Length: 257
Image 1 (cartoon, rainbow, N blue to C red):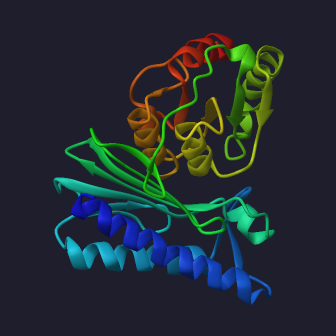
Image 2 (cartoon, rainbow, N blue to C red):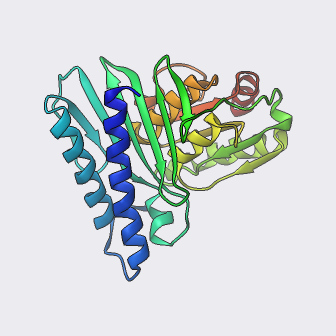
Image 3 (cartoon, helix red, strand yellow):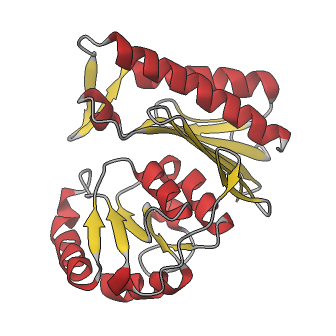
């Protein structure tokens, strides 16, 4: 395992232990709304601080782009893209579908990614050119070749209510074209599920780079395709993503158009 990926794994597991401890302790969480339908807890902050501390001790000159603390260290060759708790609303309600997501970008290109599900103790990892893994077992996207046979994941544009009508049209098209549609509420984990074949495709808009970075690299390393809703590059900046097996990806894009 690459030393940088090893640090990312250690940081993700540390954040996961903080999340699990808070979940087991129970009681009322202190919840604050960042904007409509977008929440944060003390657990998010504690997990992010733990990740940044571990990374900064190992690589003090690296930059960060983290959900709760924002950007730091612009101009560095390496940037760590961090979502300490993707699926906070699920976590608040005790719905066990959330994860830690950490990616490393080198000179603008995704180099390493970790997604850790503390509920199932599932660790997804990837390094550019070295494949994608689930708990040290090599993973590949599914062999699904038709959108009509595909199980497709999605996420509601809850932060961008102005795009609800567009999304409703997309959802209708996909529901009429695919074998099934699922919405679990943690985009990073959905992307990991595409990488390991549990989902055949996924699309969502209104996301941030920390929701997509690690999972996008995993899908590419697992043999899948990733793009924006037109199939182009720049999805991290545009905040939208479409992905899937090579053959399903084409059908997904056609249905989304």
